[in-house]
Amino acid sequence: MVAGTAGAHQPRGAVALRAGRIAWVGPESELPSDYRAWPRHDLEGRLLTPAFLDCHTHIVHGGHRAREFEMRLEGASYEEIARAGGGIVSTVAATRAADEAALIAQALPRLDALLAEGVSCVEVKSGYGLDIDTELRMLRVARRLGTLRPVRICTSFLGAHAVPAGAMADDYIDTVCIPALRAAHAEGLVDAVDGFCEGIAFDTRQIARVFDVACELGLPVKLHAEQLSHIGGTALAARYGALSVDHVEYASEADAKLLAASGSVAVLLPGAFYAIRETQLPPVAAFRAHGVPMALATDCNPGSSPLTSLLLAMNMGCTLFRLTPEEALRGVTAHAARALGLRDTGIIAPGMRADLSVWNVETPAELAYRFGFNPLHQRIFGGVTCN
Ligand code: DI6
Ligand code: FE
Image (tube, rainbow, N blue to C red; front, side, top):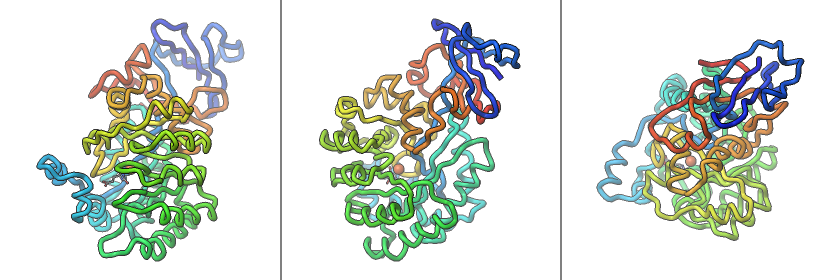
């Protein structure tokens, strides 16, 4: 299949797809003669991008937290709600109560909303079980989602997300988190290991104990770090060669240097910044200056970021964090792929998977500039047109 495409003011481009991979890409005028006789799919000048990847989500969870939204409007902060027994642990109760079918039924509309905007790969975290059974059930559900829709799912084990009510953090790490990680890994359910390093969650020493097990199992790590305060999660993650550090509003210039050296991606989550009305901006200028790749994701979760639009995350990344539209586009494609450790997607180049999105726009900037509008024309997943 050959897809002819271009922006309005660009020369027409062409991409040759074979067996689910990109075989050739370049100006249509230079299309090698071998490909000229192939069936052709004319995109009529539409913009073609790599398929988007949402590299940080919690789409598998039970229930919602609209009441907390009201409480925040009445003046309570995200941290106050968490310390009062709301927040993550309240979603834990709803998730434990939901069986596999119920979790799938609740996650599918969220997944479908992402796919409808050109996403073809979604990272899904556990972390609302905080017991062995429920953590494994969440990850099984995440894997199932990948069989129910044309999408690639990457799983992250997030047992170190919150301390369950009545438990002590260190005890929880020993008796639940680490055994759950080992069991989930044995079942092939874990692509990466994540944690929440924060005053209301786990400190660097506790996260390091989980990361040590990840290393022993040969699993890459990533970390929710420096979201609400600066407690050293970024430096810790860099020491473990993390794929990504996520949120990072409170990260410093020194952290940016460490990330550049470790090759970790800074995943910016403007939906959470917006929803909890954070005022500390992530150090975008330092990330740029030191060459830290920046990704953007929805952080879709029922508390701090009930967002199921990666296009809106791009707009917010530009408007709130002052990313350029090009940085936003890289943030949901090449850099998002890197944040997931994927080397076969995120750019349009020979040998890459034929995961592509076709847009009813003329320029890449149009993707980030509108909000509340979906210009997707078509999604191509593994070389197959999905809609
Ligand atoms: N940071 C987040 O933004 C989500 N988890 C985390 O560690 C929030 C999870 C929630 O509020 O339910
Ligand atoms: Fe998160």
